[in-house]
Every structure is written in C-alpha cells, then in structure tokens.
Length: 251
Image 1 (cartoon, rainbow, N blue to C red):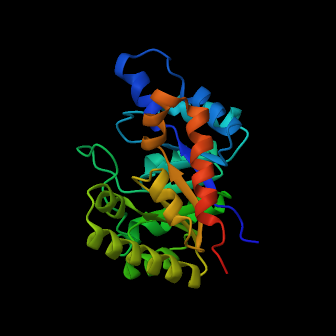
Image 2 (tube, rainbow, N blue to C red):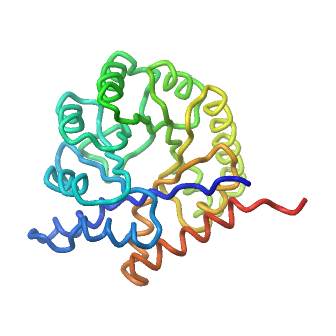
C-alpha cells in the first residue's frame, strides 16, 4: 500500500495578519495547534531577515509547544544558522530570500551557491536537523542538492500552479513533466522529495499522484481559505484531496 503524503502547514501569513496591526492576535501558535488537531503532519514557518511575519519568539514558542515536527524555512546565512542551532527544529529548509519580494520567488541556486550552502548544511546536519533545499526541478540543481549534503529537496511548484490557474494547458503540462522528471531524478539520488508553492486543492491532488512525493508544504492558500471556512476545515479538505491523489487508479 502506498504511504500517504505528509502535509506541512505554513503558518507565516497568520503572523503577517498579526503584524499588520501589532499585538498578539491572531496567534501563529494557535493556528499551528488547530492545523495539527485537524490532521497536519508538521508546521512550517519562515523566519526572514526582515521579520515580516514570523518572529524569533514565534520560533521559540512553536518549538516548545507544538506536538508535530517544526520545519524552519531560512536563508543560508550565519544569523539564521545560529538561530536554527539554538532552537534545533526537526527540519530546516534553505530558501532564497530577497527583501523586495512579496514571497519566495524561484528556487535556491544550489548549483551556483555551493560554497555558501555546504557549510550551512553540514552545521545543521551535525546538530541533528534534517536539511532540505527549496529548488526548481532542474537536473543541475537537484544534483547540487545531493552534492552539498542535503537529505531532502522541496521542488518549487509555483510556475506549474500559475499555468494551471491561467488555463495555459501547454505550459502546465510542460511544467508538470519537468516536476515529475525532477522528482524521479532526486529519488534516484537518494533524496527525499517534497513539493510546495502555490498549491491549492486541485494541484495538490494532482501532484500527489507522483509516487516520489513524500510531503507537501502549503501555506497561503490554506490561510486564505481559512478566512471563509475555518483553518481546521480547510486542513481536513486538503488532506482529503491529497488522499484522492495518492489513491491507486483502476488496475
């Protein structure tokens, strides 16, 4: 029987809403607890240099209080490495980061950034932290991820999701084929394969059909839909969509 795909819920945008007015409401920790109660397998949070959503104290509270693994998204910098080593989350996902971007745009350049990335990966791994790289489904990037010592790759699904949203069938098919080929290559190199960025119910269901995919990390869509349906409900609906995608087809 094929194992179900894990769901990591990114609670960054709960913190974004809190920070828009200041104070403590809504609390990202409460969001994490609700998501876990509804079936999330883990919680993802991105601590950015400018602290635009998640803050240092959020990382400490999440690590102390939640009952599922914490995945800390972070840039490959000395500051973020020190914070990760202090709090020791279950996992750390290295991502590209630019102050002027609204959200993470594109994947990490693991191939071009080996010298900076390798010591960060090694330091985190020595501390018992599972390291993933958020990369495009590009052979050179996947090979580089294995070479720098990462155990996991998270494939950037943004371009595919954008093509699906805009009804560009040719582009969507091409992007999905690229993701599928990248997932196969990563698995052949012994890397665990995750995926994320821009996923909704439909695209999450579709990508779960790829047997190499072990985990999805989803944030903005779930938090957005939670405004109307409630966070617990949307996590349950997402889990059901992922289960449909993973279910074996007719023989």
